Image 1 (cartoon, rainbow, N blue to C red):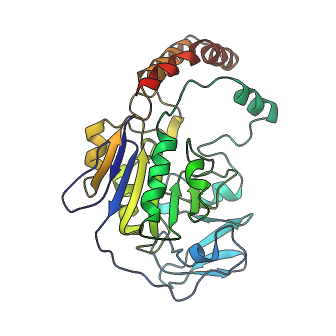
Image 2 (tube, helix red, strand yellow; image 1 turned 90 degrees about the vertical axis):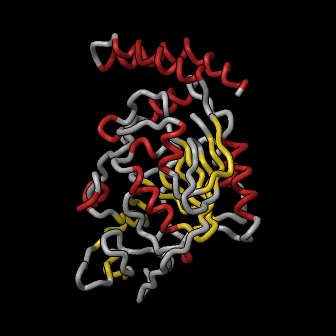
Length: 320
């Protein structure tokens, strides 16, 4: 994995993961007729005013416990589940609004038993992101230079990403955490291919370990560019040498130059690896063990054995 700090200028691109980018382009503004009802949603009032229909980008009206598109030509209705709006365009997404209303698992298994989750936390991890915390600290410093209260969109934010506490602990930075799965930090359910926000809404966007799970990563980046304010920043991480871990929601891997091509509309601020060959070797060895399993129970045993015997390889990456 690589990291990049970038700022936008026409015709330039950013290298690989993660990346911090600044948008210097101009975007059209979209103004809604009415805003969602305040005090009902998990989102802050300021961000509620930025919400738009993911299908036609018209304004939204809070009505009968749902968010409804203000456009008569569209008229889509979006449910709100425990204060979390589900702004999914069923026509252009792998997900459906009904999936979230029914509490179905999407990218994360929300039905795992508590003792399984506790056991998972007790086992040593195979991965070690050696740069994320430092990168987020630098990201925060860049955000706070032009704005005293920047608003940052987190794509894939149902849980706190590695190192993201360095950003979350900044009292002057407001995070808007979105995902296609419910989780302890999910404020909004939305698909990164159709971000349900007004143009020029955010000072920064974080796309950590998400791009490899998108059907059309380039569409997501165009959406990121649209919702960023001029001179806005992007921080992105994406896997390279990683096995398929999200099943039917796992699509792509990026080389350093491949990710730079993806962010070709942005000017680079910095880049480099955040994880290294030690972690990649540990992952490969564990998946070799998993390939020997002939049952689900045996896969669980092999996974535990792998984490107990291979975790030390990640410490070689400290030299990065």
